[in-house]
Image (cartoon, rainbow, N blue to C red):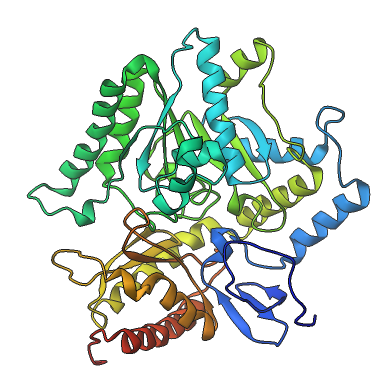
Length: 450
């Protein structure tokens, strides 16, 4: 395609080359240059690119029908995907509502929670507590739950302003508590907030079990998760897990919730659920929540493309691929390799202050001082500068400002779940070269190679 003026607009004017094709963990532009997809796009392409078995199953559905509106027809694709999803979820999460993406999944989860509480005679419950920083989507409802100032502040006058508690960023704490105690400390902040807001007004608490874009693969101490569940149960508050990024094997379990034996009341999923083959997401709950809503007249909500047979055929093929190829186990094993390689970088780069994550959702954070965890100067724009240097060298990584969007720099490494150890080493070689270039340009100290 020629370099004609583009009529498209997205977030910025940052130019990118035209995509030609994808193969496994690699993407190629039209000049033939190869890129390692080190972030699975936006943590989407869990099974890699251009999987022939998935494409064949999509083609088979395409040959039959590409669209059937859910109020007019049931489809085998949507029914089969719902059954397969329920089979892979923790016990009791067996009712599935399909959507087109993560923001829609979160919106649907919150609206499901609200309508359920209305059926229980608890109309006074409407507040959804979330964390700061966090990310739950860009539609206005999901954005009101998001804790990331650059995204939320322009639209604050248009939103209700849902209550927030601090995200459990214990790696920044400088106290004498153990990690177990810190986990409980952050969990008790939820209890305090519920009491302060008035328990009869609080509908739900939504959390990312492993942090996504806003906190960079943040994992709370183990003690946090069970105590949060207890607090929600104490006050009749519904627990919503935003597994849009963490779900479908990304962290080494089908849901990240499984690492801690937690069964949320409602789960939002997307990204890896369709793995980039079609726009797809789901809100999943149990019959105890869904049946009273249906008895009361139905779920007052919906999207045109909910349950689209093309998308659902892709989703079913993705789940079958994840299962048949053992990709959840591979994510766990390769995640251990990746974390070890990233921790090894800390000896060479003193400005890497933390490495964290679970499975193949990992991140590292830049600091100016490891003792204080003070961020690098904002003016360095490290979060974008390193991304550009890696991109130039053929590695795609994902970054955000760490401290609520105002300062700090973290970088997500979340390659497709099909990645091998040799490919991780290839990715790390490019990353090391990119870090060296960034450090030289920014005047940051680098330790000599051993």
